[in-house]
Amino acid sequence: MPSSRTGRPPVQRATGRPAVPRASRDNPVRRFATRVRKAWDRPLTAYYLILGGSLLITVLGLVMVYSASQITALQLSLPGSYFFRKQFLAAAIGGVLMLVASRMPVKLHRALAYPILAGAVFLMALVQVPGIGMAVNGNQNWISLGGSFQIQPSEFGKLALVLWGADLLARKQDKAMLAQWKHMLVPLVPVAFMLLGLIMLGGDMGTAIILTAILFGLLWLAGAPTRLFAGVLSVAATIGVILIKTSPNRMARLACIGASDPGPGDHCWQAVHGIYALASGGLFGSGLGASVEKWGQLPEAHTDFIFAITGEELGLAGTLSVLALFAALGYAGIRVAGRTEDPFVRYAAGGVTTWITAQAVINIGAVLGLLPIAGVPLPLFSYGGSALLPTMFAIGLLIAFARDDPAARAALAMRQPRFGRKRAAVRGSAGAAGPRRWNTMRRRAAARSSGER
Image (cartoon, rainbow, N blue to C red; front, top):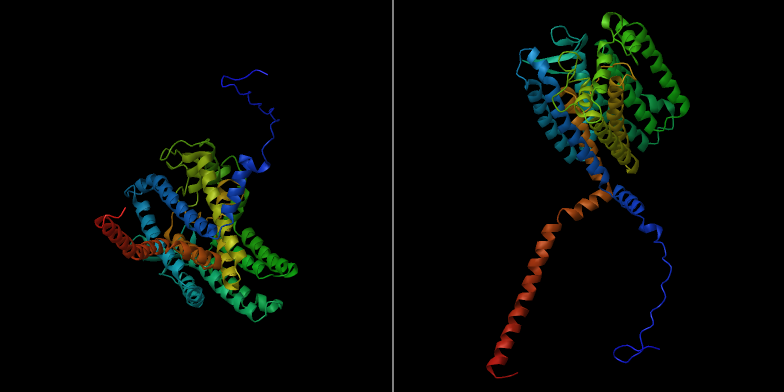
């Protein structure tokens, strides 16, 4: 056997073993999916999704309102930032409302249900008084506040139905009364029909559809049987068909679904030009502020059809981002409603989620040509302070409910005072270690002075 330079026999190296594939858990895709799943299941996920998603939608909406409304403002001999400044003021007030609502306890929200309902009914009835109510775009559903400021009481009717309906159903569930169909329907359905009647007196079919969706959402969460649910749905559908058949304007809107040509008399002008705006955007859009359709071609570019301008200027990437934000907001609301044990929180969170999701679907579906144009704004995104204020208060409700979850409350309690506890612990440890360190230094000094080694 040949020897090495030191005279020792060479070390026998072990024969190489065949490579063993790594475990499936080392797969980067699976590791990433596991991390996402764990982050998704954290107690504060819904809280951050609601807070972050709503703020992002609002900020992006302010940017698009400024971009889409400049030409309209100049055509009306107004400053280019006129509509943006009004929307920014409404967003600032709405932010305060959202903060207040997010900090209010659940009991106070329930106590506000009846006053908000009474105020909404009074204002909606006041709209029909001659000299007080105003007609905008053929709908008598506005009240002038002086100057250029107006209010649409029907928007606050959505919030009133959510809070009052959730409180009513929660009290009936506590008394085990929801098992009987008459207690489930009365007085929820009659009050909802009263609100719908006040809205339809002004001709606002779009808001009536949203209010109907909220009513069905509350009944679904209350566990209405299929027969009862189908009965109420058939009555509402019959009334809706009658209202559409008796209105030439609504029939014309219904005929514009999927239209690719304005048609005779340009009845489908708005729907077709909304499609033109989306089609010309491409993947990443023509650039912020570079829309062509907002130059007088697309009516209501900064309100009902702001999603079309977003598609034209920001492209498919921008529109998909908006859809993803609304999807995240809807998921978070469903998660809050599904994980709570408080019946009021479940009904209120489900009602708010139904409200925002249904309104977003109806608005975006109309812009895409899949649904008739209902004249409803995109929540948190379109121009309109009357729609923005109650919606931001409703977002504050969801934030309060997400914070009130026991697991989220414990996570927030552990996270907030951590810095203060850490500093206190450092001070305490320094105070305890100070005398020991001083005594050790004294002993060392005494040992050196005595010649001890």
